Image 1 (cartoon, rainbow, N blue to C red):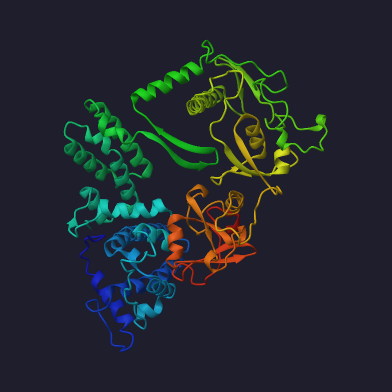
Image 2 (cartoon, rainbow, N blue to C red):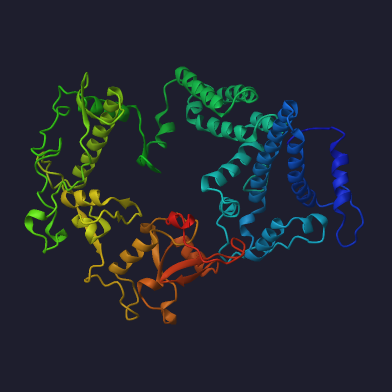
Length: 575
């Protein structure tokens, strides 16, 4: 399916002229579009396009008309580029590009960096050399190939592949040609009048409404009508407009739907981790109407000052408002330097509570507010915090049913949270953050508070009793060594991998069977898949100043520079 069904007489002569210009390489005889390799034509166009863009921008000068024309032409060119990305993703799937081995892939990368020899025919593409059925492929699937070679995120790579299946003809598992999932949106994409990225996002939004469409009296008719309406709007709206249209369509479908089929929505129910944001860790809860009503009722009860749940607790006798009196007076004995006099030992509250906040007296009662916060905003924040705390308390009670609830004491934690932290931070002398086994930083203040209230198990870095280097007498790494390696690597050491610590294995860089020592400097964290890739020969290690670095294959890094995983060590990328 082409980008534009254009029969203009200018296209064929231009392509023929390019074919004549690139020649045939060794023989030097001119070619035309019937014999020249289409990939060579594309390479020549890539070389020409940048020069043409610079020349066109320079020709605008101070003419508003030419500036407008240049801007619109550039936008059209970006449409072609976005269309090309979708088209290329489909070819990667059909050709099973992930089975390509390192040598030909590295050769292709070198040719792309210097296109002129290939465009003129003096260099030819390498032969296909594929990974055998008994060997691990260089890439897991086409999505990982796109992620690795184009430096995309996993979801961006998957989005391109999914868009190709939704908007273009593609091959099924049996090799048969399948039509696009959304044929009318496919026609919009082929027409070239709308931004392909907007069409792709529209297809994704349309697919998200499938659960609502499935419970309509005639699901197919409702889906066809909605797709027709969406296709008509793409010429005149932006991405925000598409979002508004889809939201209105969802409301209309909900209002006209018959009794919802619970089985159709049950697969979407659940609690899922969505990632970390500057405001905290984001979890997404999808529930049915019963769960929604339960949470709403609980939130109303917690925020009603006339109920037992909503009445304010007894304030602390100290200067800090809202802390229970039952907090320990000092941090635990194991966290105290015996040489510190008793009056000088840090208190449980040890500067961990921040500065006092203002108290608003209004229609919601006495609530604390942040600087610049309105009464409504403060109430909404407190309402969310109370509901979240109620859920956490319920989870702790469920996980430790042997301990009855006690409103005067913090609940006992059923889980012992390991935190790697400096001794000085734990005692209050320093403010250096600690590190959890999942690679998350935790402030020294929060660690001190958790040491008082929860089941936190501190790994005090530098403790003499911790065997961090056992030499070559032991085959397996000890718990102390694993904790030290986890604190150093934070996750899989293979650059680009995002597997956290608890899903990794400790790998001997120099094999134990070849005299490698079982010590921290000879160990590195690898997830199971990257561990398999290492043994398949897809990358190697280089230990620099007792820290393992990965050397990628030439297809990913032609310069073979030892690197660390910047996903877990972002500070390295800025150096």
